[in-house]
Length: 245
Image 1: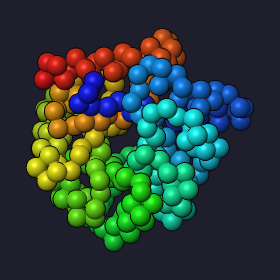
Image 2: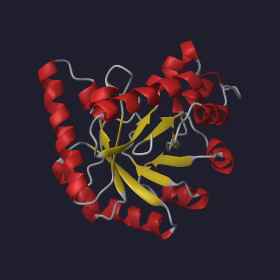
Image 3: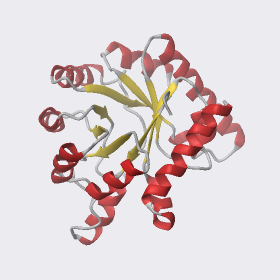
Image 4: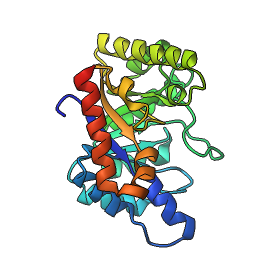
């Protein structure tokens, strides 16, 4: 799969560990299994409340990872300093609210341009590439380009959660248009949130998207088939969609 990458988010392995306050299952081991399954990248989200991934996980994964590390993080000074210390291959800036179950939408780059621009500059000064997690909105794409982002990750959750075919079709057009706009202005474009084996094909067929970050559905599938196989099956689904698209 030379033209696209699969990033596997292992946060939910840490969620299971934290639910009982044990030392297992270890997300470090999950990162190894995901790599064996063909993951091109490991994605972790170090949240401010440390509800799943811990600083220890970041440290050990950074030291042992054989592929790429994508650190999802809120655009705060605390998280920026941590990223600067551990030097992930990519830092993906995401919105974060304490009461949410998971990230509920994209960054409003246009509204918070100065803060995000400052964070982007700080991270890039540390030789860290920066992606912004945004909704598939043309204005947000342009704002991300203006603040100096190296890439954007389009929020696919609204497409994945659509309750009707009409809504899904409209959301797909938004994704397609945003991806094409990114391509036109030379901004690498990724995608993630809510993707699973049942809905990945049309999104994976968008040629402009070069990376997919998928966590919950892979970890959920792994409960039944094992993590290595779950990663392989998702990667195969993406490859087949690219071939047919």
